[in-house]
Structures are given as C-alpha cells and as structure tokens.
Image 1 (cartoon, rainbow over the protein chains, first blue to last red):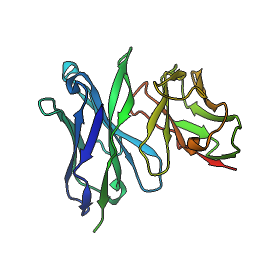
Image 2: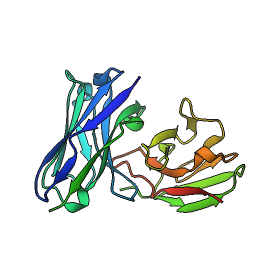
Image 3: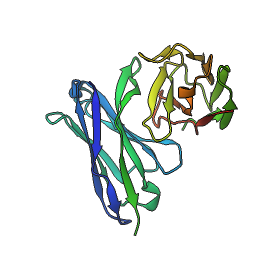
Image 4: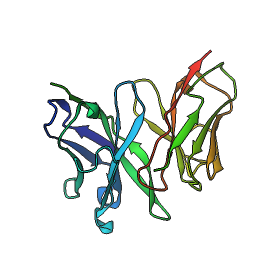
Length: 124
Length: 107
C-alpha cells in the first residue's frame, strides 16, 4: 500500500526551529514530487510548499506565509522528505500533512495520497 | 495569487438529497481544479481532479464540472458517510490555493 508517515511534531517555543519528516513506502519515491499542507486548529487547509523530483532539479515552491523561513528537501535514498521550519511563530501551530503529487501536462501537480499528519504547537 | 471562493460555507441537507457546492477562481484556471473531502478528525481525501475526473475508488454519486473560473461538486444522493468538509483547490500555479471549505451536515 502507498503510505506516507509524518513525524517530528511537538511543542516548540516561538523563534525556535523544528524539522518534520515524511517517510514514504509502497511506491517509487524518487518518481514523485511531495507537498506539505497544514491545517491550524479548527481552520481550513493551507498549502505550504512542495519539492519536485530530482529529475526536475528538486526545485521548490513555497507559500508567501512561510517563504524564507521554511525549507523543503528530500533524500531519495531513504524515501524521506523534510520540512525544516525556522523562526517559528504561534501562527504556525497546525497539523502538518505531507502528500504525494501527481504531475500532469504543463508541469502542474495535484495531491493524491496524504499522510496522517503530525501536530506542531508553537507556544511559550 | 489566485483566490478560491467556495459557497456555501455550510450546508444542511437530508439523506438522499442532491447537493451542489460551488467553487469560483479569481482568474481562469482551465480545468486545474481538485476537490478533497475531509471527514471529522480524518485526513483529506482526493475525490476529483482535472475538475471532473473521479479518483479511483470514489463512489459515482460524486461528480465535478466546470472550467475557467466556475466549478461545481455534486453529490447526487447524499449518504450518511458523506458528512464532511469539502475543499476545492487550484493547481495551475503556486501557491496551490484551497477554498475555505464547505461543511456539509445532515438536516
């Protein structure tokens, strides 16, 4: 079965850093882009950013709200994607999901499989 | 950035009803539109991509239509397991903006 498992969440003070992991199994990880999406308590979904596969340079795009603070990377040898979060703010408190991207013509992507998420709470 | 606006924000319907949710994009996005279902306390699930293509395993009572700026998600006959919040999302550019969600409840 295709599976994504996030980890690394927890309680963290404002201004600190945290790294989330997304471990994949059941598919050829290196053939896919990966996206991170977050959901603040009681709120809707917010696209955070994504990383293309290595064949496309493993390039990244980010939402304006996290650009310059968050960095997505990948290690295809381990089938893991990472979300490095620096300068955390209370507004970053959310469940963080990773999702597998399906590429369509034109170089666009939609998410077809989601992990169960990991919770990040930013509080002093 | 493209803005996605869903209506209504919440909806109450009876079992067996035909339910329609609308999503409007602030500019044309062709058919680069996906719909996700999120049941309470659960992970979002892909229902429809390319505005009208049903994801494998999704019941045929779900359908999507539209192109450009106006899209709809229709449930032909509401079932108890369809109680959820539904989100549209554009994917023709970054950021891939979600609509604010439509919470579907049973009347």
